[in-house]
Image (cartoon, rainbow, N blue to C red; front, side):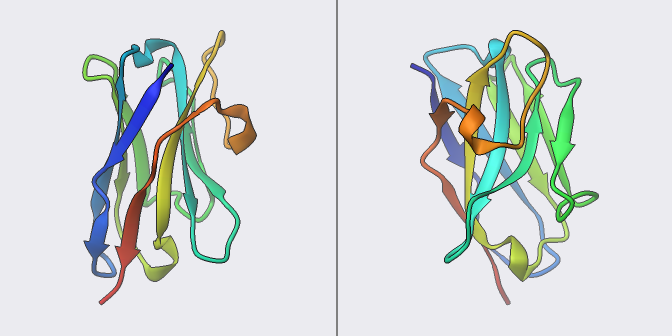
Length: 126
């Protein structure tokens, strides 16, 4: 079973940056699309970004376009989410999720994904 572990969260000031990592163990990520999702207190989970298995397809939520960048290094079995110009609205628990795909595609819909990490907290505050 694919196991995903997020890291890189923490406390950052408004305008700052963080890079989240989603690392896989046991299985290669070569066949998996990966999505990043977040959930703030009292809010529903929302899709942040996703990347297809060959990285040719990437999507971003409107709220993070131009600030966040998703990438993957299959040799390191890791997907990254570079987050710049962070603001208080970005405060949430961030999760990565994986789904094995036949085609080179990804989805911003959480129910598509079969495997989830435990989440990492991102807090943007002065």
